[in-house]
Image 1 (cartoon, rainbow, N blue to C red):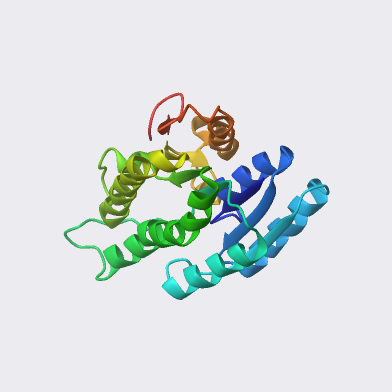
Image 2: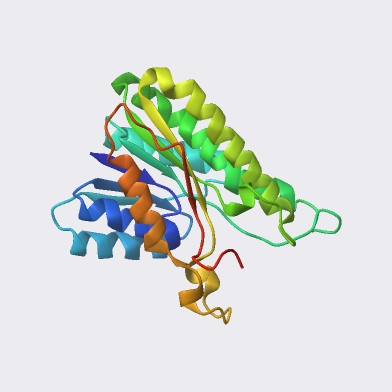
Length: 233
C-alpha cells in the first residue's frame, strides 16, 4: 500500500508518515526543505526497515514543482492508496493592512498545491477505483480569528475544495476526509512560551487520520475536528 504525503519532513506530515510507516505502508514524501526531507527519509528507513521510504524535494507553491513531484510519484508506483495534502504555511496578517501579495502566497501554498497535485494523481486513483484523500485544513477553516487574514481565507478555500472533491469522487470509490486540527505542538510552537501540555501533540492528529483510513469501503469519515482539551488558544 502506497502513501503520498506532502509537507512530510516535520510536524503533522512527519507524524502521519510515522503512523503509516509503523503499519507497513510504503511512503513517498515531499517537502520544500531538501535537507530536512533527506533526514526524515533516513530516520524512517532506519526505524521501519521493511518498508519503502522515498522522498522528493519540491516547492508545491510552484506548479512546476507540482508537476515534477507528481511525475516522480507516478513513475515509481502504479497505485496511490492514500494521499495526504499536508503542505502548508502560516503567515499572520489582517486583510486591511497585510503585505501585498500575502493572499496570493497563502493560496498558492495552502490551496493550489493540494488542488493541482490531487488533479495529477486522480487518474491513477480513479483507475483503481479506490483510495483515500486527506486534506489538512485548520480550525481557521471554520472560524475567523484575529490576525488570521489571508491564511484563514486560504484555509476556508481548502475546506471548500475538499467538500467538492468528496461529492465528485463518491462514485469512483475514492474517499475524501477534511481534517481540521487546532493547536498542536510542532516546530512552529517551539520558543513560543506555550506549555506543550496546553495544546495537542502532532501524533494525535496522525492517529485519527490513520484510524479513518482503516474503515471498510462502505464508510467514509468526512470530517475530523480536533481541539486541545482546554479549547482553542
